[in-house]
Image 1 (tube, helix red, strand yellow):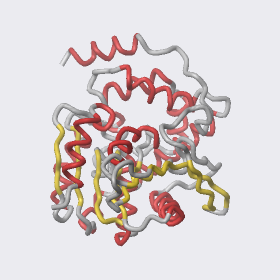
Image 2 (image 1 turned 90 degrees about the horizontal axis):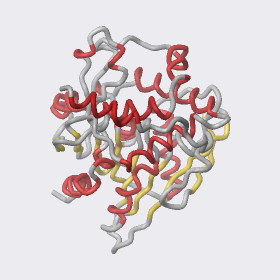
Image 3 (image 1 turned 90 degrees about the vertical axis):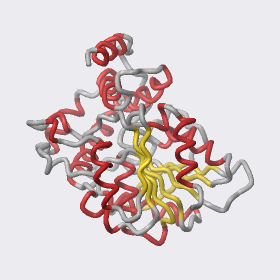
Length: 328
């Protein structure tokens, strides 16, 4: 039990004092594939979504996979997964959701998974994608469930990777945080705090240099001259996550569904603020119950891995994903 805090302390001692400014929309951060743009309207204003559209690099199998990122992630984080899928014949579409990364962050925007799902549907329509295999990670898992519930005819298969929202954390004792509280928390976010959170919750105290790129990606948005735009968006997105769990609606999923869960994930959204944090289930704990409520769902446990198995051990994650995607 003492080993993890010591590893965390050592890793944080090597953290950079300041982050490179990358722009509120990651204007100065390169993605692994050319970025495309989808311009549309939402809530009475113009918005712009960035996305990747990766063509198969092997004989096309006629299937399209859509990868949805989490709150502390971007389309770029899916780079290795997209490359592996394209190499086996899939077309791969990877959006940055509104409020995140290279996409718009409109002032006063009312974030909801319904709105994000609708924007994602429109993007897929524009891209000419019909029914897709939908893969959502972390907060992207919540969005994937919402999309699948709203548009079941568009989802041939659903894969959830360490998703949030499988339990109602407010019902389990996490106090509701209003926008003022969330803004105050965002005001304290920097490279060191991002790394500390990910080190403990995502990577179980074991840091690798490859993870630094993803800390720099997030911290570089906050550190930009217009970083307050990012902080406001992130506060509003946190409110969306805490108030819109999908747990109660899981029995309504009708498509083949699989959960791929890194078992060392300590993530419990805002669980540390609860009077008794032990009562707030982590993602792996919530998944054990959730799979019982999704008709015909499969649970794939990845022992030894944390919240981001696709980042922590890409090869192992890709093998698990290939098995889930294979026709049964």
